[in-house]
Amino acid sequence: MAMVYGVMVEVDPKEEAAWNEWHTRQHIPDVLAQPGFMRATKYRLDTPNGDWSQYLTAYELASREALDAYLQGEAVSRLRADHYAHFGHCTRLSRMILTPTALVNKPTG
View 1 (cartoon, rainbow, N blue to C red):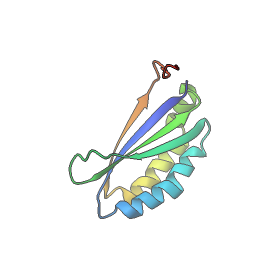
View 2: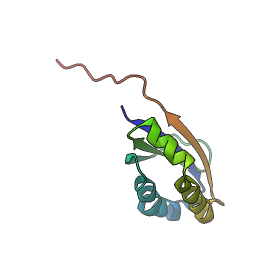
View 3: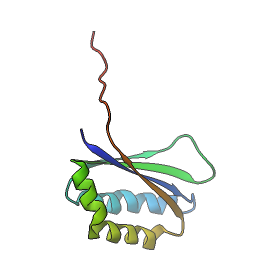
View 4: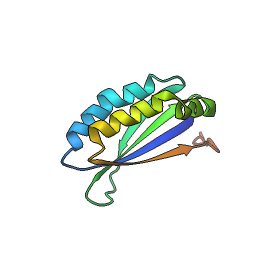
């Protein structure tokens, strides 16, 4: 099963459109260009928690080793610095590593 690296971003509504465009068109592709990343799914939370919009980007990776290599490498520092340079003033971030423990398919029939 793939590993999931989740990044939750709260964004100031005044900057949301610019952040969303940059994040989807530049930042996510830059992250996906790193070894071991397979795909990303970006979600907007429909259950507001305060005035800021919330987004969760779930990055799927081939293995825990690939995630560890990314987190210990140069790219993570560069990509985080790029995010903070562009939108550090209007975002709050939290990160999580999701380790799969079970895969349950819907029963057939």
